[in-house]
Length: 315
Length: 288
Image (cartoon, rainbow over all chains, first blue to last red; front, side, top):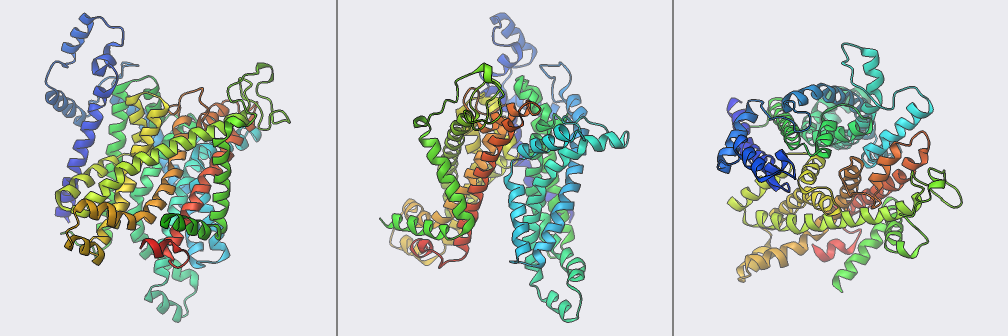
């Protein structure tokens, strides 16, 4: 098992290395290069030369990259050009808001997706299955940002029940405010993810429903519902874990858009602000953090899968 | 001639599926309107400040925006932006992704490993973030949006073609071409590629839907096609700030965007169903 985990981590190294070079080299592709980013477009040759020396840009590029990487690994992602604060602090400031949104949206997605998948799989091809499959197609097809706008129109503009712009309150400090501010963004993001979840889980359940042990359970006279809950579900969840990684991609992407709809102060909005103010150290920092989170989740999923399913050999 | 027959019979089989037929119908409408937009009595840029943020009326079917521009005109010309971006992105993704998959799947070994690591890196970030990063580098323009969306589509093509090539690689007709002295290039592009076309076609449709959504999302985030070019995502972005005064502003363009995405989805699902159930169309008989 430990060897398996070690090998999975080793496989990640080339991907992480190339991705980090890409993120670092971003600055060189920007018009004006890294110097232009630091001193602005109208700098005198003297300022440029001084900045080159101050920021070590006169060194060989390989040295510059190694320097950047060794700082990044230790959590030093540089200083924001716009706010002059350390990038790492700015990101850590926003991360809890995004994680809280992600947790709330996961609950919505599970509450919607699992029942939809279970009911469709119990009557494959039936009218209920077709209606529910239509629902998951809709959940996937309707753009997240438009769904968010519709929800704001109903619940904030018309009914005035909930705020149209969501602020971040930690759930353990002010549960009532946190809920009020989280409901609409969580539904917006959760509905989309539930579409992915329902589609894959249904496929996985239908395969299991045709297995021999289900026939045995039926011939014993077990009611359909307890076959589903006791026997099929645990088996179907196994192949399902593999698509959690796939779901994470839509999750992170969806979170960026959802935060924009509700002007929610998370990591995604920080990234958009950074792009709009051309704050490249902050852009790089956000991308690095998201990349690490994303890769770490995928790795955890892989290991979890191997751990749960005894048929997978680690060699 | 052979291909015309395949296209027609595939279309015919698609039209027999309700969902796919509805999708094709709506898409045909959008494409026609976008192509002939200049011939219609529409003006996406003309401003009429006195009549800004007016609700739908006989003069302005979809109402007017904050500058008094006709929203319907902007939706129609926005279709152009969407379709051009999607088409360009699909072409870029296919031109790079298909050869990557062909070479990786055909030769295997180090070429395959190198190409697939590249695909892994491209997939190391969710598509929208990858596209945003590219736009942060290139600056904001229609070309940058198109290129960014296109590059995020490369892994999809590369993986699907690679899987298809690996399953065809050991088939008799491929080995026969090799035995007769056909070059690797001939085998890849003249033997294997035509037999992978149906899978590639499905990916084209799937990616078109993703590309339209991605273009709109980038515009909604304020990093897509820059104004004043009409774009559905940009309209939703601005419309969102006028939800109290003009709710139709964000709702109507959103309906058109959603229906376009759903249309592509239903066509894609219809096509996959055709591939899974051969016999419903001549597509399989001719190409497989």
